[in-house]
Image (tube, rainbow, N blue to C red; front, side):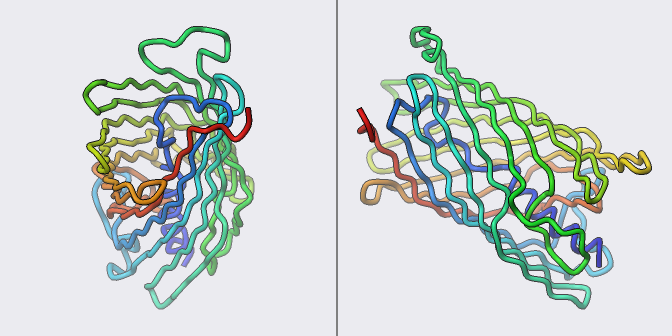
Length: 296
């Protein structure tokens, strides 16, 4: 049962890892302006990535075992000062696992993320031809983590610290933009299970645009980690890797836009005890931004 539970945790990990990227790209929000997005992601899977990158059943003892994850996340950004903004990501998970004679279900808050992002204008540097910013933040552990074979944990049980370099540019007058970021994630030990999860390199690159009320974006998002380690025995587990293609389309509705997308895994690698799902995730959300400052 423990292996089943851990495989389900891997499904949550996938949705936690690839959190919402600032929808305005790498342009730091002006003071008092910002955006908010409510998104629901749904994934149903019987398969995951093995340590050699092949696709295998989540539970090798029960190939019909199935994991179902639905995550509602509220993400928002707000400009604080000239050249500095902040954004938060708040996830709510509903996770179920059916198989091996057991049906498990857990609903609750996951681990939130908080970031600050600084642009050159914070230091009085004039605008550059390419928008650049430095983003740093932390994943907190307010979600519930339980080392219990009968429980699906909604938290990874440890903090992450991230530092990312972002860049983006508009191809105006052509209504297309190109953006991306890359950086490093330092992951603290989960002391409850004596596991050092291993630090990770992460990246995202995207091209998008708009035509009237229609908008589109295609992104590639990924991570490449170091092997995780059992701190009691020193045993090394396979490093975690994941690359996804993320197409999104949107349509202006009211003051914002309805956005429909998918996350399509194209490469993955993970251990049996922390298996990353290999099935697509479907997303539906509403994005709203404002350019009139909330304060003067």
